[in-house]
Image (cartoon, helix red, strand yellow):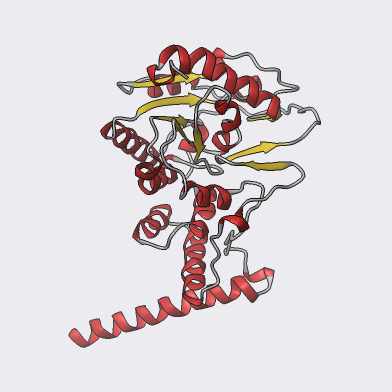
Length: 320
C-alpha cells in the first residue's frame, strides 16, 4: 500500500510538471489551434488591468476605494473626485464578481487603507463565476496560495491553464510587472492614473432589443459578497453600494429589480443607491453601449454622486 501511494504521488507530481511545461510552451510558441483553452493576458488590452494592479501596489491612504466590474473602472473617474479634494483609487476588473472582489480586498485593502469603499454592484455579475476577471488577474498578481485558491474556486480549465502559464513564466523568468510597461493608451481607451479607463468615442449609442430576464444570484457569489461586507465592517470602513446607471431598456429588461434592491438594502450600516432611480441620463449621449457610460455620462454621474450623496450624507466628505 505504501509503495502504491508513493507511485501515485510520484506520477501525479510528474504529470503536474509536464502539464505546466506543456501549457507554458504552447502559450508562447504553439499554433493558435492549440491555444483555444489557453488565455494568458500578460499585457494591457482595452481594460488596462495590468496597469491598474501594478499601480495598486503603490497606493496608500485614499479617501475612496472603488470595487466592481467594468462599471467601476469605466464609471468612477479620479480626476473628477480630485476636483472636490477627494482621492480615489479604482480596483475594478472586467466582469468582476464578488469572488474576485474578495480576492482583491484580501490583497490590497490593508495597504490602500481607504476611508470609504464604493462597491459597484452590477447584478449580472452575481450570476456568473467571473472567469473573465480571473483571467485578467492571474498574470498580474504574485504567485501565491491565495491566487491558487482563487483558481480552484473558479474551477475552469482556462483558469487552470492560465495559472500554469503563470507558474511557467515565473520559473523561466519571463514575467515583467514593471509599471512603465503597464501604462499606455489606445485610440478609444485612455488609462488614467487612479485605475480609471476613459472611453473616447463620439458616435451615438444605438439601442437594441434586450430580452427580459430574472437575475438569480449564485450562492457562492452571495457568500463571497457577505464576507466582503463583513471584512469592511471589521475594518470600520464606511461601505456604499451603488448601481451605476444603465439605459432604460437595459434596466427594465430585469424583471426582479425590486427584489435585487431589497437584498442590497438589507445590510445594516451599509448605504445603497440605485442610480437608475435617482439620476436621469441621456441615452444617446451618456452611453456607448447599453450599460457603459461615455465620458460625458461619467462626468454627470460622478458629479451627482459627490454633490447629492457623498457630501450630504457622509461626514468624511463634509470638509472636502
